Length: 190
Image 1 (cartoon, rainbow, N blue to C red):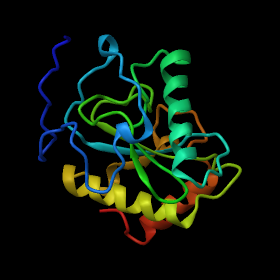
Image 2: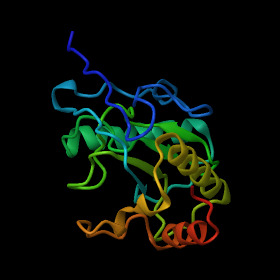
Image 3: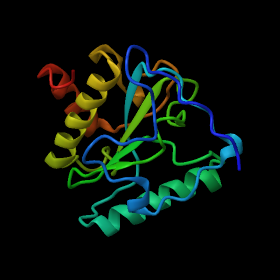
């Protein structure tokens, strides 16, 4: 078997482990395939959280539809992008359900050149074309606040993908970007 490196400690926080935060659907719940261990890297101490959309119109209303979409994303990331696993650590469906993506002990693949110590949180949908649901926004707020508290990430280090200087993208879409701005203004993140 391939040896598993010890989980690094988060900056000022608990160790990064494969363990879940309460209420999150584990990888097994959506039938996640195994990561490619020959090309996955350990997570460095967590200092950032980045918000994304998956960029594909999505109006699924059932857990079965969310499971199927997550499997599609993982297959695309592994087979087309040649990444070790799904790129994001967490995904939020339109009902506000949070799903585990890549385990936190592994560095993600969601912000080119800036994945070290960076947790990727993605909402299912294309928010250039559709608005996030109220349940998705509530799930995002809870998830980000939980991660901020657990890993001591200040609000100034919670970015959307387009806010990274190295990024040239519309992600997470103008309609989700506006909701994130509202959450910041209301001080709903850490």
